[in-house]
Image 1 (cartoon, rainbow, N blue to C red):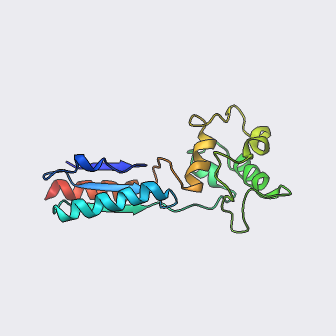
Image 2: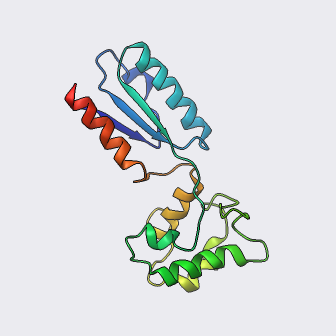
Amino acid sequence: AGIVCQVQAVPSRLLVDGFPPTIFVQMPRDSRTAQGVEENAAKLRAQRTRVAQIRVMPLPIDAQYFARNTMRRISPAQSAAMAAALASQSKSLLNVSGYLRADPRRSRWRAVLRPLSGSDALVADKSPIAELLNVAFAQHEMTADHIDATLDFLLVTLRR
């Protein structure tokens, strides 16, 4: 048995002796959560609980970012057009390396991508495109990235 903790730390009062092995998948850009995760990990290690951390960093948005991360529900051509639109505005939403300049929860990307979004309504916390932008920005979001390392941690824990 083990725990996978994403997006938040565990309330300290719950970290009692015998707490199950835990892996934290967190985004360091979210400094409050990162601090809580560091405190959790230190407390668990002091209790001799197996613990691991995966730090999820921002991702560049290249021409195939949306296609690659939606199992091709967004076509390669649509994905390329979306990435180009984000990069081509007079005040580009991407830096020269392809990373988002600002938190997509607060930026004006919807106006840029709406003509290219198909049936996606671009609603926060429901839209696949909005969620992918949140993952790319890497501040406070669930992610399937690093699932192999997460499952490896749990499998090793089961074998002990």
